[in-house]
Amino acid sequence: MALCKDFIKKHIFFSNDLSDDPVKAQKRKDLYTDMIAQIISESLFFFQDDYYNADISTIEREMTHISYCIETFPVVNAMVDNQNNYIILNLFTMTAANNMTVITELLDLLSRPEKATTSQIMLFALKWLNFYENEDMISTYIREYGAKKQILPVVENGKMYAVCKGYNLSPPQKYSEYMYDIFKLIFLHELGHWQYARFKEAWKMAYKKQAYNALKKQYANKSVPVNQKQLESWMQEIIADYIAVLVYTKTSRQYDDSKQCTKHCYIAIGLFYGLIAMEELAYERYKKGTEKHPPVYIRQNAVRELYAGFFSDILKIPYDVFMENEIQEWYVIESYFSQIIEEYWRKHYG
Image (cartoon, rainbow, N blue to C red; front, side, top):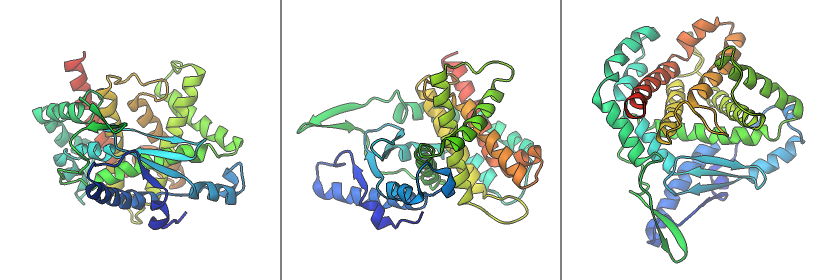
């Protein structure tokens, strides 16, 4: 759905004024409103008409009336409220996403035009895994962006503000442009929830079946260790991720013999899950998950399984070949983050 930025800007509001200085506050609001409106305008979409439990004009009307609340409290999070038709996005997420791009050596390697096998890339990547900079990166994330950071709220004229470093999206990294893509994937995830809530029951069941089978596969012959309410929530998170990844890659298509989607696209997806993994570690929930969210390694594997299965069938590419060649960048970044986080967890919590 093509909505212009100016129209979307009318539906964006902030949870506080961003500054006590009205001039500075307005400048920041203008900057972030323009940036977020651009991301939203590039991301709104519809499924086929027969997916929805209402006529398409009703769905269009609801989509044009979504309100976007931009939270300025320094947390990494987002949510959708289907009942009140609004999506909450935390601006601080972009600052944290910028931190994901400090792995410049790996991103340099993945961005090269020449081909290399996954095993060849991982041989280079493994050389960096034991460098102290990785531990420092994780410690910095937990301290400045994760759950353990010190937040000192202050109250001024009845409003609560967070004392933090501000919302300048700096210092820029070599690959800072990826923070916009990570934020877009987070938005698409919430919009995926919004879409799924409006599906016909038959389509909901079809997606649930796929999500359950992918989730169950991660546990091999064991039962999925969740109660029914938790299982429902976990499946919805996987479905929202799957929708987000499908839509994001659809808008990043390339048409040559090597890939159906750009390297940039798959690097961004890998970094998106890297951010979720860092948040999980910061909350000391690594490989545990919550009632609402499955552990990130389960969540990512299930979504990758759905995505690879879907496109390997459509493109008539063997599944293993698709995993090796098509989504190599996503897989390598996932492996890299899982190994450095595993080591950090073992050293500090094991």
